[in-house]
Image (tube, rainbow over all chains, first blue to last red; front, side):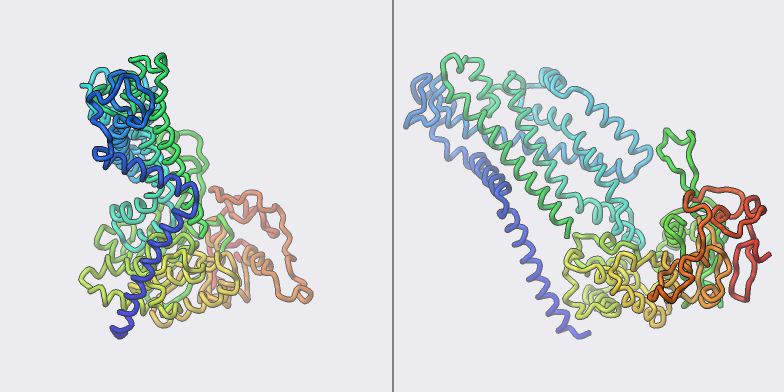
Length: 297
Length: 329
């Protein structure tokens, strides 16, 4: 075997890898659903990251007359204190997304670890962990959320903590079932036969093959967390002084925005939650369709 | 010649229901492998023939220690493989390999062909340079007929056909020069036109690599084509074993005759004997539950009273041909 052949092989390989990355990107934008999802996500991410520079006013100071409807100077109108609703909305995006993403991260971390351990070790480990998960799953989540929020200090971090602790069980179930089915696949057997250690089989053969499904479930976790946070904030639980979509709805309700006919104060956060949820959902569904198509190959 | 693998009184049974809270309830026990003994010699292809559910795959999985038996021993180089600990076990893995049945399932879809094939080298040859490993991979891919091998290195399994994937699996199993390869129906998922090619590749590997094959199949024609020796497996037990030509030309057990008569001939007009063997009881109890007597008794046209109460012992027909049937003593 001369070196020239091997080098040529290496060059060809790089080309193949590059074309593969391109193919994934093309596939993502080929379907209208995933394109919409990516666009929505990108829009809100930009709002969240660059919000401080985009927001026209400081949301905490009076920048116009009280209860003024949308106008040129205040696109989304003002609230009961004369604060700019658009600025509230833009600044609030960051907190809402931050809660969604960190809750998804922490519950994915717990859920994947528990699911992997249960599915992989099986037997008593599985039985104990899954009975615990069952217990968490049958507890009515929202009342527990309300109670926990009432006892913990009202900060955004405690909201993240509470939501994380309560939203991982479903993820662990999904991961466990995936481990159980992947464990029986031929390539896992092949790795075993090759003499590979159990830990390496776990992290090189089993885990990578369920990353798409974990990713989809992370998206659902993000949606769930954003909605749950808004719900908690709406009831005045958690940090009511932070600016986010939930607290916007809370103050709008406390100050009777509906009676004042101030629809411009209620609709932006409500619609944003809806659109973001729809977009993420479409992204997740699109990705799972892509996986199904890929499995057919 | 000393044998590489010696199987002694191997028993493996499964319970039909599982779960830690259900263990004591009524469970059906299925004897997939029941007191099986045979041996495999170096540079020998031994075919295991049996119908689906006969336990032949279980036998193969026991020999590579993917399963633990209920009792019995498998001796590899004089040592029971089920007592091997980490390092000896690794050595065993290196010497005894398996080709899995489903080529669409036996390669990790996320990894390139090179990553999959090089895996044993990464485990056993930790100090080898990447370039040397790549050269060995290329050499082995070419050996199984994937030419030019460089083009396959970075492909994903999804980009290959079933036949190509099965060849990759064979290359991967052969890369450490094992002494024995258990091939579990390696061609049953492939197009008929590809089968002969894969089978010929394996026969050639036997000569070039000094390797023994245990070839598991449900097709006695394939078994005849491949095997130096044949084991006829029925409901977890060996009913007949011996030299291929002896077993095929002088099938002694009624089940072996049934198998041979069931091969559809290319020219049906001339073959008068096709399906001449009459089934008495059909295939009603396919699952091999443990019972006294011969396991084939319910289907056997020559069944006698003692067949139902006593299990027959192995009888020598000729020097390398044994059968378990009361018709012969």
